Length: 202
Image (tube, rainbow, N blue to C red; front, side, top):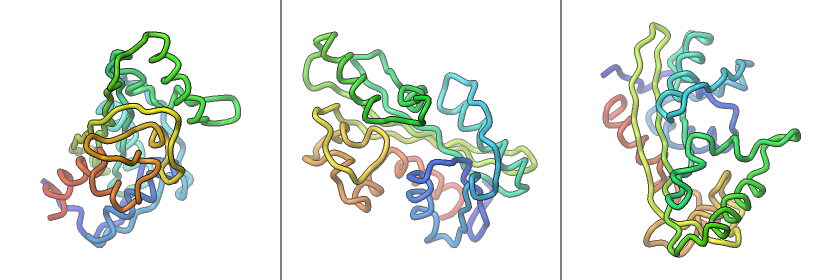
């Protein structure tokens, strides 16, 4: 596996929350992380129906356009009683003409669970697929997840996305309430990054 330690990397995302988390995870290895947004790169269309497929699209586009190694994250929440939805379409459920509205998306999920009289616990899992791509076309995939359940009402303002309604197994705080350092240590993204570190950085 190719090494990344000490490299300048492009995060193939315009999401400020992801950029904060990924910078924090990679900085100990001497990696300088810049976002696709900071480089003025466009956002490619995510046309695949899997996390891995969309992660590959984003990473290869950013690596090709920047000439630097790129890392992308495609992630979402899968709710068991909704057949795994919203899954790969998690961000789409939050889209509005004015931008992404995650409180609206969380309310949609809860309303659907109520309409289906889904039994408690309303189990769910956050999933993350990371793709590292190099400008020459080589890539590597790393997958992680964290299990929990959906709770209501929304709790906490420290996370982003669906964090305020996700209670990880064995915890009393949602990801939206949890200290960011604790969340980073146990999240789906941290699980995937541990595998990336073992393969490319350790």
